[in-house]
Image (tube, rainbow, N blue to C red; front, side, top):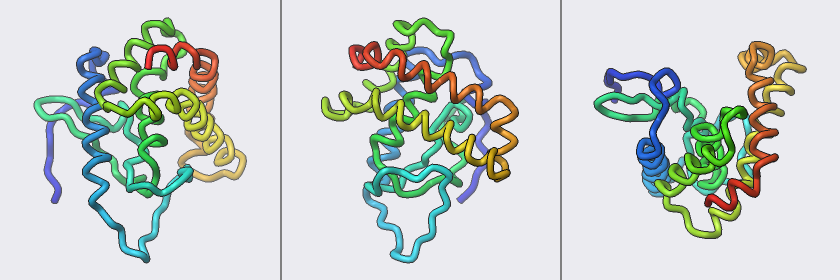
Length: 187
């Protein structure tokens, strides 16, 4: 079923408040929980730009501000990268994309945003401890995919790498890694 839902992409809207980030974390959790009941057919073919470390459930794989529609109803769009992954890998990407994408932001403020987002997801303590390192791995994977695509001429990633996405993900990766202990303490 398809329907038109009016709204604005979160990346083009006012910055999300901590309450909004908490809400989005809860949305990510609801998507993951709903996905646990889906069993893909044995012959399913998945096309994903960044392979996941395991196949726990089918995830969106791009839950980010550029794919969240906000308005009267909030919803994630652009499901073309959906494929088997893990809760942790998908959460790491979305938590980083929503809260740690601006390397110029004071890390203590970013940590408060991260905490609000992750609290909305309600992960267990084990997942919270793994999240900072997994965010670093996932952010590096995004940069490496863009770089390899650029080197191989694989579109649309090759053009995105040179149009600023490579620099963005390199800076984001450095920010996530540099402040790992700040993120861990916040979680």
